[in-house]
Amino acid sequence: MRGLVALAVCFSVVLLASGGVHAQDCNELVRQLRDANSEAFNEYPQLNSVKQDILLMFYSRERGTCPEDLYSLGVLSKSFIEKFDTAYRLSRSPDPEDNARAVELAEELKAETATIEEGAESFDVEAEDLVNSAQQAVSAFLVNLANSYALEAGSTNQTKKVIAFYRQAGRAYELAGSELEAASFKIKAQALEEVYSRDMETADGLFREASAAYATAAPLLREGFFSRVTAYKLLRRSQLMAGDALEIYEYHSEEEKIDQAQNLLGEIKQARRLLVFQLAIYFAGLCIVITLLAFYTIRVLKTWYNDSLDCSLGNELVQVKGNEGY
Image (cartoon, rainbow, N blue to C red; front, top):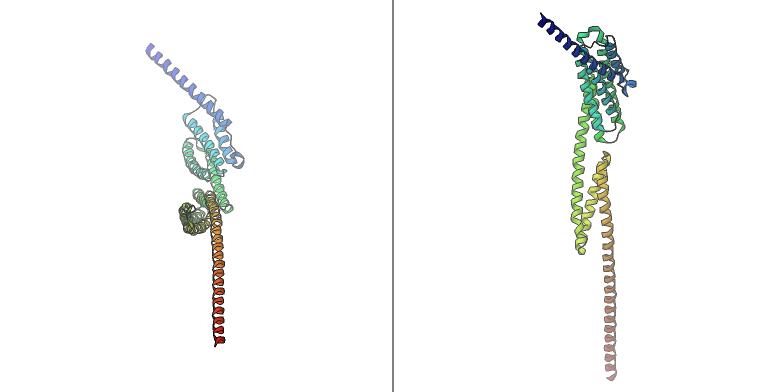
């Protein structure tokens, strides 16, 4: 009998201890939920409703009572609010990678609404508002994401970003259940990416050839006249190709590659100006030499002509005197 009493006392102590610990965990969870805040609350009041609905479920019970299913639902709700806040902040970032991550998190949030709905089944009508608020918050967020990225795609000149925005808008529309809009943006992204890839391949090829031609011309600038003439041809060809590459980069607003092409063009133009100056000196010197040779030749020919004339006149005088002697 004493053994049964002792066993009952021990069992009661264990229950009280475990209940106390769990109540403490719930109190801490309630405090964390109460302190939870997000920039998204103003734009998405449904998210704030998730917080208020789960807190009401906790407040409707005695402070020392915290069932396991309610505790789990509280943890799910807290995680949902925190992830939503992260996705919201990423969606407002100018970085396309952050925007893509926002869509990924929105997809995870949609999956979590299903998990919350499963966790709320045991509470029936009591948790209905919580589930609806979570679903409405995600749905509104996805629609706003899709519309926002569609607008961003139309306001940027950088093709790479336009493609990213098209894809993100298409994915967000798909998650929101707007299949027609999703298909439209996916087609736009695919078509534009094909053009972009083809243009970038052409521009990169031109840039590589321009760089190679410039590298070949550079050592020839320090050599003889004919080598420098060859260098001039290479530099002219290099400048044309770099200019064509730059036009394509500017069309797609590839800022980093625009800088690279402009730097190469600057070096080519500087080398070409120096080479033109050197060749001009060569040609000026050559012209001076040819002019001097021409003057010298003319002078020699003139002297030869005068000597020939004098010789002819001498011959005529001899003939005249010969005739007079007869």
